[in-house]
Image 1 (tube, helix red, strand yellow):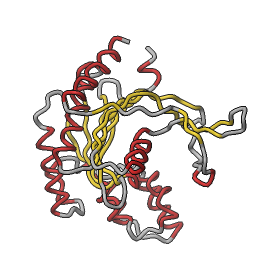
Image 2: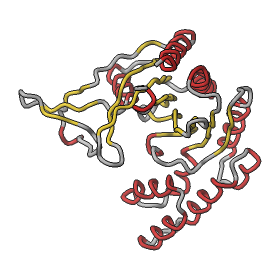
Image 3: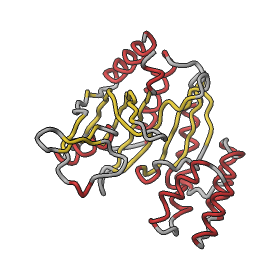
Image 4: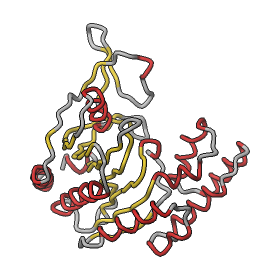
Amino acid sequence: MRRIEKLVKTFVEKCYENDFELFLSPEVEALKDLSKLEKDWIFFQARNGELFKLRNDYTASIVEYFNKLQLERFRVWYTGFVYRYDHSGEVRPKFQLGVEIIPFSSLKDLELVLQLLIETVLSSLTDRLLVEIGDSRVIEKCVQHVPRKFRKQLFELIDRKDVSEIEFFASLHGLDLSNVVKLVENSFTKRGVDGLKDFPLDSTIEAEIVRTVDFLSKFSHITVELDFSIARTIEEYDGPTFTMFDLKNSLLIAAGGRYKVNENVLAVGGTIFLEERTWSN
């Protein structure tokens, strides 16, 4: 537990150093509108008949709070548990530490989030970190012609990076996914800035990627690679994304990026998440 104590202590200190405020939210929320019930939510009925759900995402609560109060600026940190189903259908708690900056004003906001998470993780969890940089707009451009009813399943196939499955899916539904196939193939071999020319990037996106990679080059003990095929939460994001892997223990340990708060506001955030085997030891 000493590692986790050090992790939390370092994280909180860095949050206060950078003017973040603590965001508190109950782990249990009342379900008032059943039409919004989603299949991956974990919910239960109280003795009085009311339905409640366990928190499965901090960012959603923060966005809802920001929009409800119509705030101009929100710069918060949070820590606690979220609850999600694993692949076998079992409920698993995950311990999270994260930050959110609303609104997003420039790449400096993204750089601050990256720096805070990287320095926190390297302080106690690992000394070998892989940071993958992507951009949701790249995949969106490749799938803009694909009907929305197919996108969730397609994103799952892209995440598995199985070209044969994507080609079969395209044939089954009569879709042209040649650009998607090329994107996935390039994700294996074009993982450096020198390979950007092989991706369908607008000049603005390319400039942002180059700047972010250059920013990350100042950190020791990390490897930086590009991966534009990360699709599991692509519909939640709007711009730069990142994932962090603990190379020492082969674990996905953090993720984040820029996302939509509403039609007029963008935000950026990132989360460190620890599996039970990590925080319980």
